[in-house]
Image 1 (cartoon, rainbow, N blue to C red):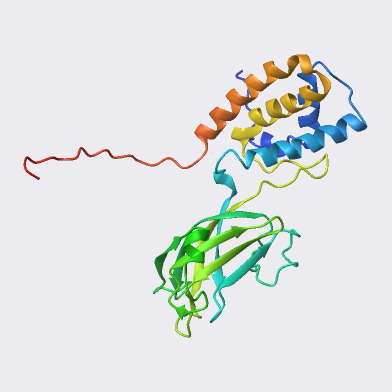
Image 2: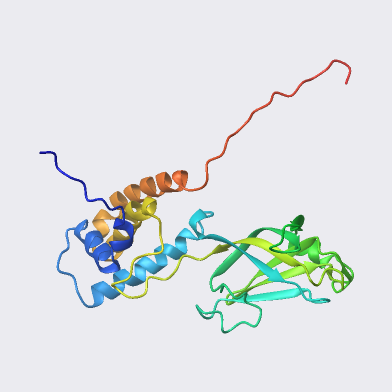
Length: 250
């Protein structure tokens, strides 16, 4: 009689924080950890997730939403203070609590109707936005600058919506921060592809505090597994390469 399989594929959601910590310590030859070691490991895991924010875009953290535009209003704030969005008067009803940056945006007309249409908005840098002579001039919004603070992200729109555009939305894709670790019984805010590098990364971080002689070894393992996860992340699409034609005399 053939053996059966588990019929599940949920290990990344059942792999709790305390188990992650336990496995990471075991790689250092440490078992039955408790007290300050657990707190130290949870803190290191949070730091690891923050460091991943400097490793490029994590596609599972990309979301999109619609921002209701207000006539004459140029600035829209998205605070990070709370998970339910109650600290911000401009947070959309779906709740944005950890926005890191905006990737792309469109001006959306007739939202959620059969005549819905989008027109692209251009993301500009601070110098370009600073060069606009009248930042409150009204018209059809077609540019925006994202200003990132410690506690919030502010989207500056130019020009500000006039009366004919105030009923439109700014639809945009944004990057969320990876959620904090929280309770030891929690699962992590990661797809299954990043479980191996998460554990090896935590082992590397813990080795610097509890087993310095193993730090270099675990760093190599971590960087290798993280690189594979980053290469696998994203959405595959077709690539077409077309040779450029050159003509004499042109």
